[in-house]
Picture 1 (cartoon, helix red, strand yellow):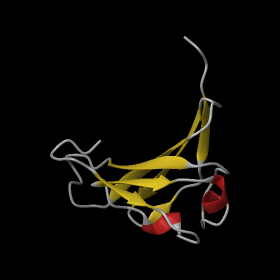
Picture 2 (picture 1 turned 120 degrees about the vertical axis):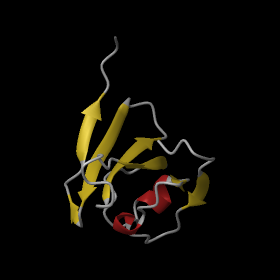
Picture 3 (picture 1 turned 90 degrees about the vertical axis):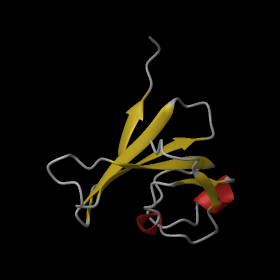
Length: 100
């Protein structure tokens, strides 16, 4: 996660396309289920925070390689993740928490 400075929080508004939320210096926040249900390419039906992380490697430092991680504001223990690599966007993948 962005460690060179404080991330700016951005509140998502209705009908925002999550494909356009790719700035790793920001935390994208959806405050309600009502808004989440209007978002384009949104895999959850709840308020959430979305983190964008640069996953560039040393051998490809300038190619746009990102991951988006959504953590919903509910008690399900689930988060979702997808990758954006060189303009290609993967499907969302759901990870269910198991108590350790």
